[in-house]
Length: 161
Image 1: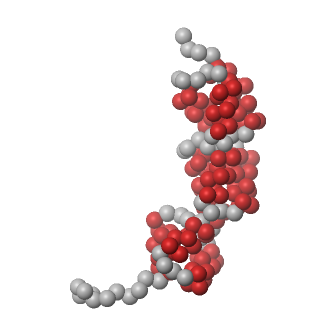
Image 2: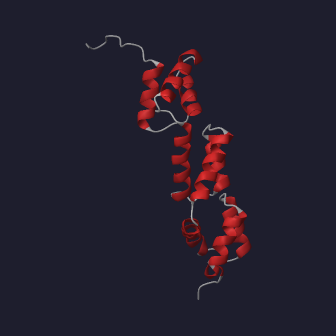
Image 3: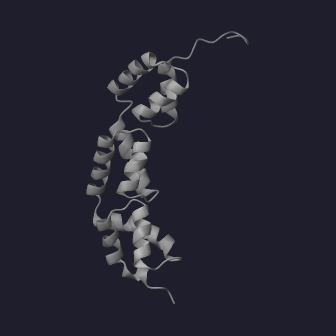
């Protein structure tokens, strides 16, 4: 193509594939991005349907990968993950299903390992059980999970000499 020659217009299908090549997206997130780039709903809907039918766009798989990252890499609990998935445009049903699936599949040892890592960072500044409980609660963990780790790790609650 020579310089200055016009290019063919970008289609919603092409733009969607370009966006998905960069990183995974949820259905609503991808639709919103296409809309922001000036594509009409009439052009977006068939693209979303086609990507979903081909298995390229899968909200459940996207949410599962995201939830695992939020838990294992970032140390968020059930509630915080649920809120973040909802902010990504995933339905409440999908978000709850994924959070329940993730946390039900975790062994107590896996849960404790992630929470211990968080507590070791926090321990330098805090040893009061109530404050640690509140801090973990603010990270989205549920009371049963917090008590499990605090009860098994009383050494976090005693100051170092």
